[in-house]
Length: 321
Image 1 (cartoon, one colour):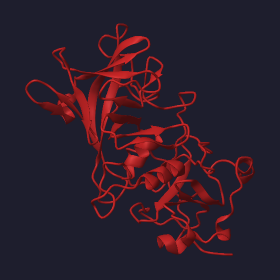
Image 2 (image 1 turned 90 degrees about the vertical axis):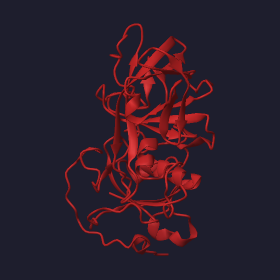
Image 3 (image 1 turned 180 degrees about the horizontal axis):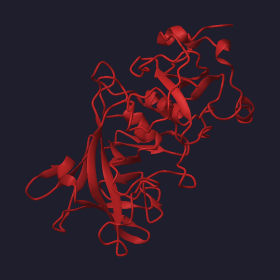
Image 4 (image 1 turned 45 degrees about the vertical axis):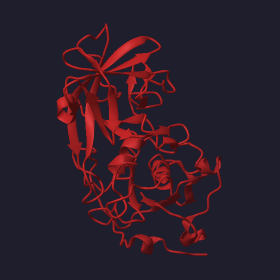
């Protein structure tokens, strides 16, 4: 059976030579970097403090999987106040007002870890352009940690490998993610919020306008959980759907969604089809972005994309290399 997937996306592919750029220097870049970890850390680029990871926090103080819990916010006057995520924004509730956005610079998030209390100093607040044309910007914070050893917040960025004051942490309210299996862990629970570093799949998912609090479909409803899961699988090259990533930070790939919200500024011609994606992973695989088909076949047996009828699948993404 032979079916061309190109009509799904109305693309005319042509060879495109383009230099490597970072996510922030060129938000309209065609080639996007994928993520599995970072070059400076062993297996994760999740936010960290004192070797404990803080990819999610609970407003009521429940501990995350690394036994880290939120205590609250500390004002510049050293007063402990409640903190919550409203949508995708952090809000500190002081006696006089609710503080958010740029006004939070100088505030600290106090967390309790198995090694004691630590403060995460908010050093920056920025907005970055969405990768989806015409969609709202996303916000990000600079967070660096403070302790008895680093009383002025000189412990470095919570995102390994990033400059101390870089605004590279975005908030996703009401949802957390299983980074091992590349799926949603908790959804629709306003007590939890995710902190995602720029290099992480959850950050990129939000930058693609697929977050749970973003207007995605006709400017109203967010992407569905299945669409978000498909996005996580696609970004991390989890072809088989069980959580194994067949990519590395910095690997280039073109991604296009079936809804037409993510398209290249210049349609690349001559690109090789990599895979078609649903929330279970790749439904077909032609040319992996980093490894060989043989390596993937050691985990699962996927057909090539000319062997399937794409109309029979709820395809969310198409990727090319």
